[in-house]
Each structure stands twice: as structure tokens, then as C-alpha cells.
Image (tube, rainbow, N blue to C red; front, side, top):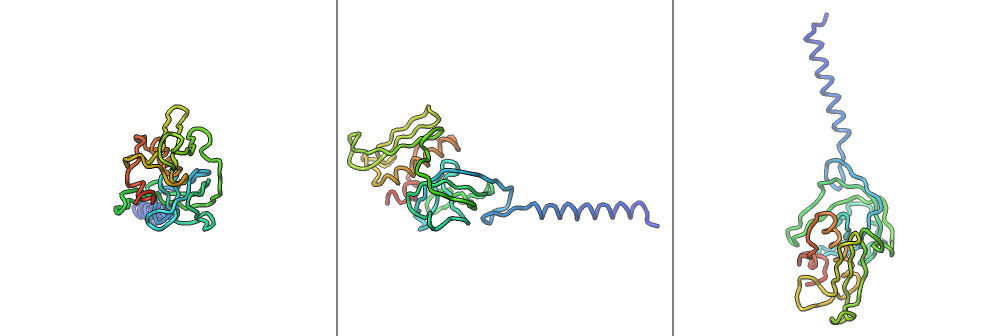
Length: 203
């Protein structure tokens, strides 16, 4: 006949195995990061060819996005405006010491073109011609956040010399990143030199 102690020991062992089994089943790994899985749908962004010779996504919801899976090669076009969905682990970020920027790793489940993103609140972006504001020929942007905060940026920020963006796509990328700084990290709408360099906007 088993003693109470033997039954207790058996119960503890069975409980440990059960809990261990549950832990192993609930662990989620995305982009080599382990943690709680977050799913997202219809995030907005623009594709950019970065200084690391890879295509990334600039998003006002996630910042600099590096897809580990699901990035359709047909969408790897610098300046392509997109809507994308997928999954990520909340702490799946990497700091690139060479360029002084943080990137966010995601696994894409869908991605599609969209020319109408950022055309209505909470974040509206309009590309402008710098010469219309008395500056050399080039591009800039007008940004409106939550119908209250407005930015008119007809030239490269933080560089000096009132040099316009050379392409409308470059202006759009920085506008989106500025929107990210405003909405997600409650930061001042300044643009670090590192962002401009990482996105190949300046050399």
C-alpha cells in the first residue's frame, strides 16, 4: 500500500511535468525572438532600400521594420507605399551600432500596394515642391498629426543649407518616420542624422 508521502511525491512530479509541457507548448518564436506573440493588421508604410543593402519598411506604427519572412520580392521597390500585416514579438528589436538606429523584426503574412495611405487622420502626409516655398528645386513634406500638430518641412531637416529632398520618396520616408516619433515614442519631431544616412538620403 502506498503511503501519503508517496502519493504526494507522485502528484508533485505529475504537476511539474504538466506545467513544463504547457510552457514548452506556449513558447513562441518569431524572427529568432522568443516571447509573447502579437498579431497586427493593415499597418501602413513605405519600402526603402537601406544602407545595409536590404529592403526594409518605414512605418509610423513600428519604425524601421526588417521582415524576416513574407516580404514579397515584387514589393521590394524603393518608395513603394504599402499596407502590411503579420506577427512580431514585442521585444524583437536590434540596435545597429554601425548606423546608430533601431530596427524591429517582423514576420509578414500579407503585403499589398496602397497609394492612398496617410491621406486622412490620424496621420496625414502631403509631398510638396521645395521651389514653391522659395527654396531650390526638390521636395519636402507637409505633415498633420491628429488634426492638431502640423509640420511644414520643405528641405532636409538638421542638415543645414536648406537642401531639399532629391526625391518625393525620400521626403515621404522621413515624414513617416517623423509620424512614428510623434505617435509611438512621444518624441520631438526632430530627424536624427542617422536616419537620413541609414535611408541613403545623405552620404
